[in-house]
Length: 461
Image (cartoon, rainbow, N blue to C red; front, top):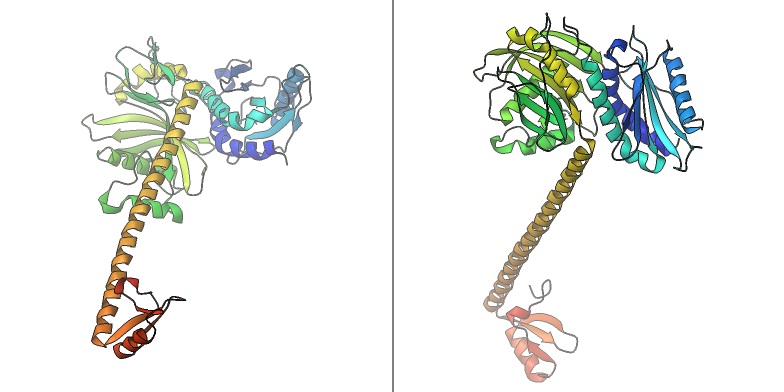
């Protein structure tokens, strides 16, 4: 098994789950019947789209691999075919090849094919130079995922659907103005009266003039309290009545029932903001596959706005380290009587959502650097603390030693003893004062009295 198979298998099992969930809800009619191409700023290419003329997943996989062969003029050497966990309607593989059309060296990549029941197959390919692929694969998966999300949203009809926020007849979409996020990590089209409240690292939260809101791209790390290591960390962080977990982390068991998980996370995130837990009532739920669900709910955030309709898409990611997993959330909230009026506009807003992978990558690298800096400061503080403790301990032991010497000297005085040193080999002996005085008289050149400060530990005291 080569390195690309080992690295890519992990990428597929973590990232492809969400991608395949999105593929599963994109009808053939919602997308252009041609393959689309995306150039990844950090290196590599992304190709995705529906596969025409094929009625089976194996047929679609063979077709897309032939396209890869034709593009590079070299037959791809594929790894094992497998189905990513939780995606029975999909298959994937890795490949390597040596292009005959240019001198770019060995190419490595991943092919994914999905074919939900009643739909024609769709496929996605990501590839890059082999020496670079292990670092560009994950960013390309994220970019691909966002591209497919825009297709998934189109599945909503005027009567509502799995991915949309409501139902009933809808008004035409209003005109949108492209609005960049404050950190330039993405952009979205907003209608008149809407404004971005927060937007960073590809995540955006916007509000409208009539209590509407739109959250897209939220990524929430979650600690699993059933894991012993994470449980200890949670207990340490919550000592003294502090709020559950600092930063963006929240806590919930992996495998919790999805709607209950959403309620739990919502309550904890509200607590972090010193707000009451929202009351969430589920109206319906659609399973989107790959541990993704779409909830239609009524939500009262206890903020004076009353009960609002909320359409929430939540995907539960597989654990990315022991005791830690994550959820991704997209959410729209608005008064229920505005559903028909706003649905088409909300769909258009979602379709206009774009991310800037270069900025996100730079921000992620900066965040990593900050973490390293924090770690370095913590190391320095730890070393300083250790030095202070060592100094404290050294002073303590010196005091104790001085007390022990003084106690021994007092004991010698009470017992009429003296400590004598034989100077040729610096040997010490404790004897009565009379004997000591006699030795000093007989051989004053080789014997002398030992002062309290020169007592030897373990010998004189």
